[in-house]
Amino acid sequence: MKIDRLVGILSVLLQKDKTTSAELSEKFEVSRRTIARDIEALCAAGIPIVTEQGKGGGISIMEGYKIDSTLLSSEDIKAIFAGLKGLESVSDSSRYRLLMDKLSVENSEAAIVDDHIIIDLAAWDKSAVSGKIDLIRTAIENREKISFRYYAPSGESFRVIEPYHVIFQWSGWYVWGFCETRQDYRLFKLSRLFELKNTGEKHGERDVPPYKCERLWHLGGQITATVRFDASVKWRVLDEYNIEIPKFNEDGGSEFSHTWSDKQSFFSFILSFGDKAEIISPPELRSEFSELVKKISKKY
Image 1 (cartoon, rainbow, N blue to C red):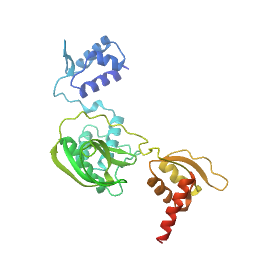
Image 2: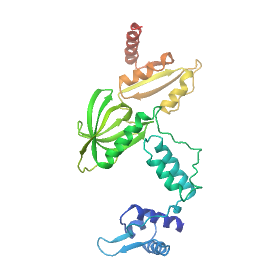
Image 3: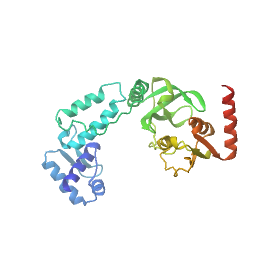
Image 4: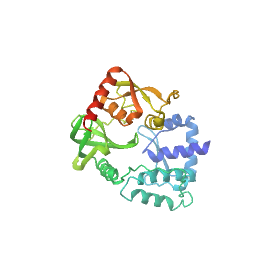
């Protein structure tokens, strides 16, 4: 529909300093002549669009032009509010509440958030991550380095990084940036990050690669095993691994094979089920786990 294309073109122009009719033609899959007519229609609607010919020219919106928020539909505003409320759940500042108030001024009906969807990104203890997120966000905006003490399976370390993204994934919060120790980009979980400080030291320009969420980053392919689970813990296996478990056997048990990043995380996982999980194969892992259980038993 033409109206959808006009809104789309306006959105592109508001996000970019300048574009060309060729780019718009390719993006919206119409001819340049159609794009020209669309630009004329937007101008006729009172939107100050500037067209420059020749090398370095292009199409842009006059500097300082502000979009009327009524361009957004009621459903658009509700979706935006739902997202902002999610961000507010992990922020100690009032910035998201103030932004929602601004959007509410001319969209009072749309501002009534559809509370069928509630997004709460906070941990049990909100203060555990909210302060960290706000500090890191400020450092990112000011292009300043941060330092912290980090606790990982490999041990404890002190890190200084150039932060570029605060990320919520795998049900947790992370900061991603360039680590001075590793001289590479690394991901750090906020719940294992302490003594966080903004160093105040500026970092220079860097050709930062786009962040990619490696969905199975924790599966390094080092430990593959078959485990039998009791029927009473099927809910938890589904909750943690989101996989289809084979039908339960006559004795109520179920078996499946999976891959863990290392032996420590695998044994910790099995131990967390108490007597409701049993390693079936490989035999060497079963034997080694048996020895671990014996050592634990001696402590009691």
